[in-house]
Image (cartoon, rainbow, N blue to C red; front, side, top):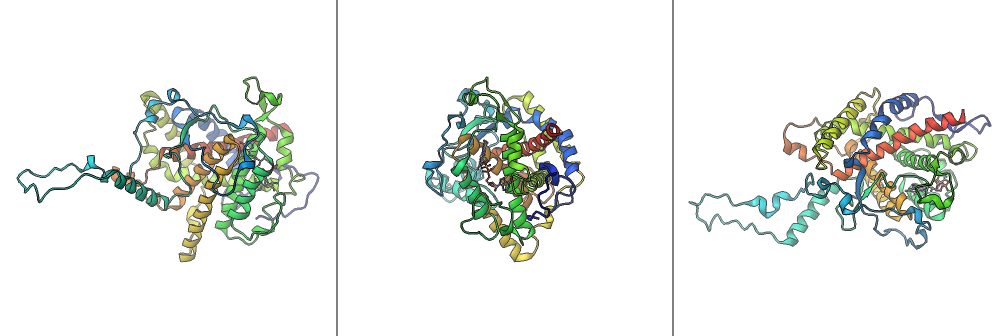
Length: 442
Ligand SMILES: Cc1cc2nc3c(=O)[nH]c(=O)nc-3n(C[C@H](O)[C@H](O)[C@H](O)COP(=O)(O)OP(=O)(O)OC[C@H]3O[C@@H](n4cnc5c(N)ncnc54)[C@H](O)[C@@H]3O)c2cc1C
């Protein structure tokens, strides 16, 4: 798949590969185009502006764990993200409602001594006092158990985590580029994807050529997911590009819009040694993976309260989510995840490496030197990680249970749900934007 079969031909454009099969699945590009642009994008656009989905809690203050990032500080003030003030956050999101505490059964309030007074008080004495330290340990144990099935590091409970209003900080052109951005992508592709690493290979050498030949389906899928996300980021910065003066970056007077030259320079066969059209196709691959994850988790997602504290809006959100999930479930050719990681012990090992590599990439997001890019990078990786957890942790393989206790075991955290829907929203918007670029080019 990774190797371009055709030579450059002056008549080809960015869209030359966007036809027929998406590869590695039984689905076609045009089926996705029609389904997404007509049925999914309009619904997501109205859903993602609701309070439950627009406020995302994230820790943007973590240091890069892999290299000294002094040189990767964003040189532009336009990259900064303004966290929400307390007064702007819906009351329901600040409280404890819906916050899962897997260690709750160990804490003192839940261990009331209900013993019959007739019983020997001393014999039945249960020491229910649990030290602060022990409670912290329980939390650590619970987090450890949870980590086993997670594909990303979840940082919304950390000290530096703050709510960010996604509508006030849209993903768009920031001017983040050069060595810092390249180091992130290089590290992701050459050190954290599968395949032989070619020493000294330039970032500008197309990354989907020979080092990736001969990979198995799972390893190829890993690369295609990352490449698809990269494509989506680069489509957004081309379609939400600053058209007016550079000083307009943060002014409301700034004019933002599509920049066809930017788009072509990133995806045309001529500018990318024929690879751009394949990168665009990878966008469709990540799309159908997240689409399938939403379909698979639909019974659980329907049971969520989407609580923000506003009864009316919460009800609207539940109805809109239900409507979206019905449409998603009706997609005719969903990805078949049961074909992946089948093959005994070797495939278990492969799955574990897959998860480790993905987790590492989620940590690399703390090295992104532009806050706005870091915010959207983290959100999209967390959304994809949640999709992978739904597809491959085994927790969502059975039918939704009738008992609340059983369902609690599979509960996703609010941050995971917000990231999953917003990440899918990004992909959906990118596919829609491709149609707009196509129209401009006609
Ligand atoms: C996590 C993250 C988030 C970012 N968010 C933003 C943002 O919101 N706004 C913004 O303006 N900039 C953002 N950037 C920067 C942006 O992605 C580019 O890195 C930057 O614009 C420089 O582009 P470039 O043309 O040098 O190639 P890059 O996009 O940096 O790509 C580097 C190399 O990777 C290969 N490549 C390119 N695309 C693909 C693909 N889809 N699949 C496989 N290989 C590929 C090519 O060989 C290319 O030369 C972000 C960067 C990162 C790492």
